[in-house]
Length: 485
Image 1 (cartoon, helix red, strand yellow):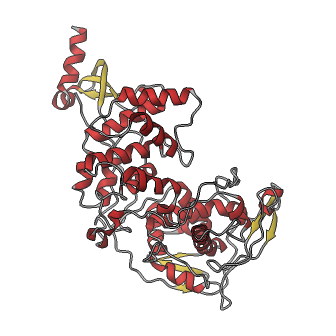
Image 2: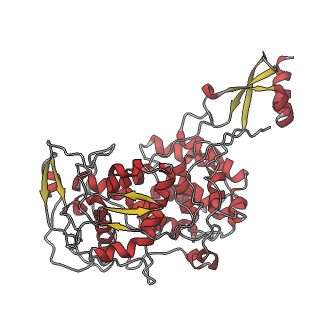
Image 3: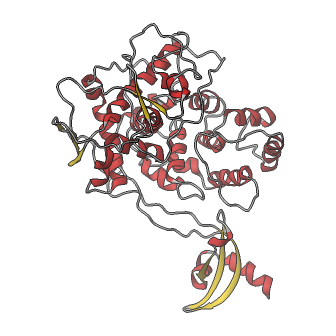
């Protein structure tokens, strides 16, 4: 008993090649930032990334960024002596960088250097930057984050490598994105497979953990639960997991021609937004099912978009092309020109792994969000929706691996060939499956039924024409009529 209705809405796309050259304007720019007279600015000297130095320990309690809520630490401008560029031309549009633009490159290199120093068994502090020593920031490379490393090592590369079982494990982990929740389920029900999946057994384990005050979800980013009629989010998410599997997500991934096609399919499911869809795609991309080029597709999240506005001020809002589409253009441009910016600033960037891979579009999107957070303290004059850093960095006592675990699937030859889908932006077709019919009336054009949709609240129920339902969902109509005859 089911019918699919669709709503179409264009979203971000990567339909063009991103190989444009760019120009640099070198006259002095007008200030782009708004000032805040209630904030004290404290300058400090930034270290040269990658080069080891004698570091004095700066505790969270004694750091300049922590002593006074109105004190903010801001790095000095790092423009070359030859002159500060006023603007860059990207895709025919002129962008005027703020000092946050150079901070992006400094942060990218220094945060990666911290990871390098930890793997070399250096002792804390791993940086001379008091902000990086005091507050938690994700790695420059998404694949190096703790959760992603666990996903690759414990979820993807352990267990059956059939597409269906791989997808099940990744979607299950992605549902909560919390290592402790995966370990709990694995300990109680493992090995975790789709072949042995039982909703009640999973829900019993999660319910018991919740009753003991355990947090099931990560706090990294919000994951709204679909409305499948259950009071607990974890139950609604289990229904969504089943929905993915029953709709052959593994088969759709294996047969996808473009990553944009994968995006359009996943986002069609209840509660899947553009950013949550992209994060699931990235987690799936570490498997051997999605073999696409690292720069084929990107979706800027809210933090990345805020970071871009701090880097380029109001000049982004003045572009002639659609802003959301242009944000994708900028990310591709940052990827393609990263070596030039590091060289201009005299920064050594270590890259990823033995091949010293540069940042890809996912890494740049990822780091834009982190620079947005970093700038709340380093550049408070550039406003965003959030202005504070509420969590302090807590050092883990666990040993730090000497080498990261990179996905085995990255060696697949198909990943060397860019495949950016031509044409316009992706089209979102939200998936609506009938939950029940709850009413009947005489409409302007004939009989209509009140349809309640699976995964959506009751207020989203709609009146649909009898003719359409008899064609697409005759069983639902028959069931309703049987109740009232």
